[in-house]
Amino acid sequence: MKTNTVLSDLKEKEKLARRDIIIAAAEKEFTTKPFPKVTMRDIAKRAGVSPALIYRHFPDQQSLFAEAFMRGISGIFDKIFVTIDRSSDGAIEQVIADFIEYFTRNDQYFQMMMNFFLGGSVDPTLFEKLTRIEREILGHFDLIFIKMNAEGNVRRHSHTLFAALTGIVATFRNHPEKNMEQVLMHRQRIAQNLSSLLRKISTSPPAVQS
Amino acid sequence: MKTNTVLSDLKEKEKLARRDIIIAAAEKEFTTKPFPKVTMRDIAKRAGVSPALIYRHFPDQQSLFAEAFMRGISGIFDKIFVTIDRSSDGAIEQVIADFIEYFTRNDQYFQMMMNFFLGGSVDPTLFEKLTRIEREILGHFDLIFIKMNAEGNVRRHSHTLFAALTGIVATFRNHPEKNMEQVLMHRQRIAQNLSSLLRKISTSPPAVQS
DNA sequence: TGTACATCAGTGAACGCGCGTTCACTGATGTAC
DNA sequence: TGTACATCAGTGAACGCGCGTTCACTGATGTAC
Image (cartoon, rainbow over all chains, first blue to last red; front, side, top):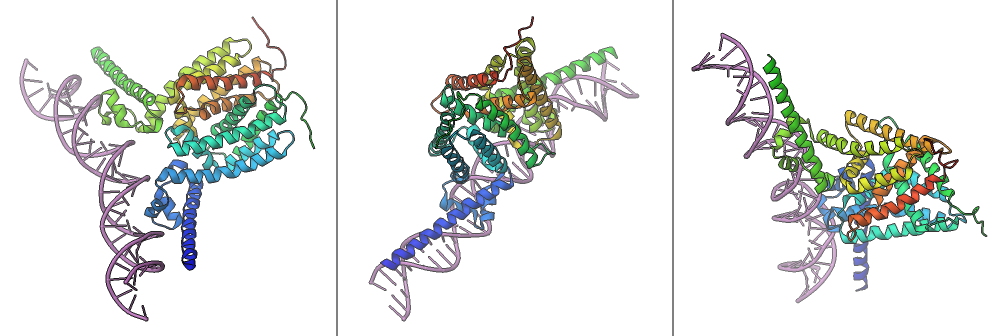
């Protein structure tokens, strides 16, 4: 019985590993071509499995995409959240710069995010997850404005910040003759402008604590 | 000979009218369903013609979409440009509110805009047109900041404004339980917040001129 | 220890559908003589 | 005025392709007796 359990545990692990390989393959595919062009065949090929196998792990394409998206998106925001939590003044410049840099270097996640925003009909489970992430982001953005003693409605500032950051990445994209570093620089300049705008709403010089 | 010319003029007009009907049908279709779901068959059906006929007027789908987009988008910006030109202080609150309202009530054009931004590869002619429009928009936004005596780099403020407006429309979308008026209200609140942020960069009270 | 059967990850090929686009054709109008 | 031919807007059906998804099957491993 014991051996039995150990063996089936191994089986289980193997299965999870395969699942992992598929998600990783999907993430990798997203880096090579625009989001809507990635196909199940592509992913299967990269993962070294048959397309049919994917459907043993995920009910459909959207579920796989969602999982790949979640995995990628959590990375950056966890990092940003730490920056906010540790800072005494909200570190808005740092947060803004990190957001822009991450989404510039990983445009695939931005494209996915836009896709979910614009696509309209996502299934309720996914919608739920996205809403939770959004709330988490806004909650942490609130902290920035609280720490910097912002005047006015804090949550509204958070919305404004999130919208502006998203807009910067959405509107300034790869002109044919520009490479990624140039695009990044351009976005960062606009982002800095945004930073200094937002700094102005602080009612007092940053409160330096501990 | 004269009759001849008049007749062929009529023919020509008729042809243009048909072309017009097709574009109008396309615009109408975009209002009924999300942008990527609109098909050539749908448009043909609404226009009351055969799908094949569309290809007598437009080389391909993208050209038709582009033309429908241009037509729709010019409307609002012409109106906004007039507001800017006529105002003494740039009327930034009005411009922001109009932008948000228009794109909320005509989400199809926003979706098209995002599509062009995110889609990546558009043909050079279309790219050229889009770039021209963008320059025109930024040029007029510059006027706003000039009129309000903004401190700092004017063009950079214009970029920031455009990005933020786009971001507001992109990020706050139809939650299943909210209707358009509620979405509009929400967006307008964020937009007002943006307005008052931007007002702060004026170095002096608005210059009131004749 | 050996044998018949069950389970289940994994597969390549095929299904089915949607959709952009083209084909082969029609019929009305214009033109040449 | 009549006739043969050219032009061209317009059409419904068909082509071709891509892609998500499923099917029918294989083969390895586990289980019962």
